[in-house]
Structures are given as C-alpha cells and as structure tokens.
Length: 298
Ligand code: ADP
Ligand code: MG
Image 1 (tube, helix red, strand yellow):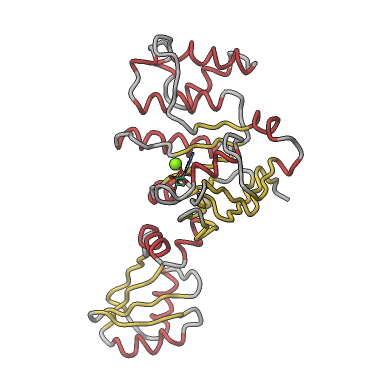
Image 2 (image 1 turned 90 degrees about the vertical axis):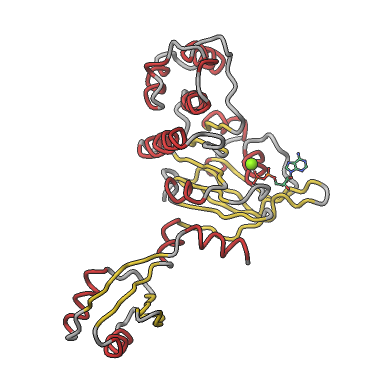
C-alpha cells in the first residue's frame, strides 16, 4: 500500500461566528502533488496552519505518517513556507542557509545542492536584500528543502510575483515533485493548480466542494465538435456508439459528450467504418476555470 503522509479527518475551525474550516477531510499519499484551491478566505491557510501546529483546531483529527509519530517529531520531516520569506538582509544567500543548517543540525554540504534546484547557485554570494521577490521565494524553497523533507508545503507560492517569477516557481515545484517529494500547495489560482497538481481539494467558505484528481475533474469535461455533409446520419451513427452520453446540435455542429474517454483517432475510424466522412472533428474541453466557477457559484 502506498504510504500516507498526512491524513485529515473532519477537521473544523471556528473563529467566533466564522466557520473557517468546515468538516474538511484529505488523504495525502507519497509522491503526489496536492492543491488546495479556493478563493480568498476559503480556509486554505487555516487548514495548513492547523496541520503545521500553529493554529489550534476546534474539532476533528489529523495524523502525520500513518500516526507513527507525534506532530512535533513529524514536522521535522516537513518543509513549509507559509509566510513571506524572511532572512537576514545583509547576509548572502549562502550565509543565510548556513544559519538555517546550524539551527536545524544539517550538514552544510546540502546548501549547494538546494541552491542549484532553485536556480540560485550562481547568486549564492549575493546579499539577500539585493534579491527580487521571486528570488527571495526561491531561497525560501531552498531553505525548506535543506533537511530533505518528505513533503513540501507552500501557501500561495507565486503571490505577488511577475509572470517570469511565477513561471520559475512552477518549474521548480514540478522539478521537486519529479524527484519524489510530495507537495501540498494552497492557491487561489486555477491555472496554477491545473499546471502543477495531480490532486485537488476545492474549498469554499471552509467546505470541500470537490476532492479528487485534477484529471478526473477535467476528463469529465472533454467533448467533441463534429460535422459531416449529412449531419442526420452522423447523429444516428453517433447514438449507436456505446460511450455516447449526450448529443446536441449548435450552429450546424454536432456536440457530443462521452461517458468515458474516447480518442479522436478512434472516433474518426468509427465513423469511417460506418461510411461517414467527417469534415470537422475537434476535441474540446471545458476549462478547469469554468468548472471551478460552476462549483463555487452553485
Ligand atoms: P484563505 O487562506 O483561503 O484565504 P484563511 O484560512 O486565511 O483563508 O481564512 C479563512 C477564514 O477565517 C476567513 O474568513 C478569515 O477572515 C478567517 N480567519 C483567519 N484567521 C483568523 C483569525 N486569526 N481570527 C479571526 N478570523 C480569522
Ligand atoms: Mg491564505
């Protein structure tokens, strides 16, 4: 069985009248990239704060590493960035990381390796205060990686960055994930979650609206736009296809949703075998954004 890094069950947090986290459950397994997606104020940071032991829960449970260790022991195997990166401004990147190593009892030989991952090796002797916000964020990631954590937790990792900085951080997250580190990130950005995460928990007003893989959220939304000289026969043949779910016509184009994944080439062959030549076949999908809006507006 794949090992569980973190298990959250029916977690609740109330701030007076505000139910910030409302019955949230989530299982985090090794090797995946999880996104907690939701608009501002939906309870993302509060949820992360609880499992990192900086916010007290109201009720519910969470356990780290199959419950094999106490939270403070478990947190030694967790790398987390939940605030704006803060280092000593007049010290270099390398000196700042040396200080972190000294405090945490980590060998200095990790420093270059982690600076390399975040693309700051050639800037290791520059003072922190000369860094851009994106570089500061990347240094924070290097710092969180020094102890080779089992999981890296990031709260809104690209907030406030310019497009290039955002791109760099996302590439780094993918690189770290490809090396086997489990990642949990909170974001209010749909495309961020779509681009880097394998799994997603959608929150609104502290409640879970969707929990599952990003693929199964998007797979459902695949559909085809078709056209033939004789759309009537096209529709008849289409209705005989075992995977056909719904068929409709919009402006001379036949729109079909399938129950399961159907490949464009297979579909083309299917029609050809039935004596129909398509003059239009386009695979489309509803973006995660549209689905997210549909979920959060309901
Ligand atoms: P997100 O990270 O998704 O933006 P938060 O977890 O920060 O959301 O906040 C969830 C809700 O809890 C919000 O309504 C917020 O105002 C409230 N909240 C967060 N922290 C506190 C606090 N320390 N005291 C009172 N209310 C809080
Ligand atoms: Mg937040």
